[in-house]
Length: 317
Image (cartoon, rainbow, N blue to C red):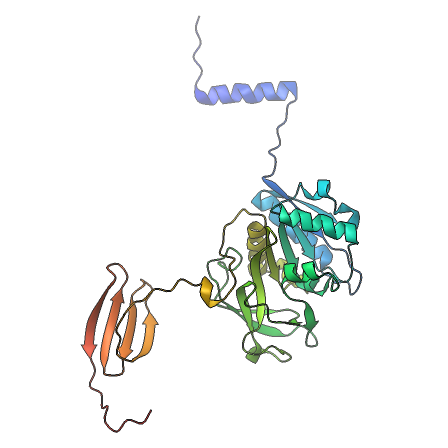
């Protein structure tokens, strides 16, 4: 007699045989990252929280996490298994010359680096690392004040989940240099929202760049234990890890004029004075003579929407 089995029945039979023979299949994670949290200076009490948070992110986003404070992990063979190495609140001189050379070769082979908070307070005598992290720590105001972060890049995976003005509490770093021009600035601090900033109106606080053959991402956040339970900070951190690991593509060109795409909307404007961009991409702008124009990106055309009555005589600036 011929027996016909439905698809559901066949699945049940396969599961039954799997149980009988004791076979189990654990799906491998897509990639691995290494969390390195060695300190030779100040030690943050948030390090265990950071490790646990990254492990949780890994479990939810298909990557596995190894954590160590052993510098001996920095060998060619060991580093080769990781798509990103995360310096979590490291401080001071933590790698010898051989370990430094291995990490340089790792990055040159296309590796990824994530720097969190005091990763910028690390390896001051290693110029290559200074270029990797982007800028060294200089100082910070007392305590952990609330401040506003201005998100500059809302496309990068580490900043897409964030509001344009992100209000949070942390320890806010000042840096020895402004890294703009060599890195892609993702977010800046609004120094008018707290006391103790020393960098002025342009105070980068998170950035990324291509470096020495690999990818690097840095955030100055992460001082407090509470940082690693904040949904927005965790989303920020996850996007940085995925970028550094090469899992999420993003613009990492330096924030300089030559890396912007310039599109001429109006080749012969008459003294444009005000401009606004609508959500559908249309550009509204007013000219000194009173014309209100609209640039339509769908047709690359310009229309005059109206003419304001303006007085232009006896004008002095």
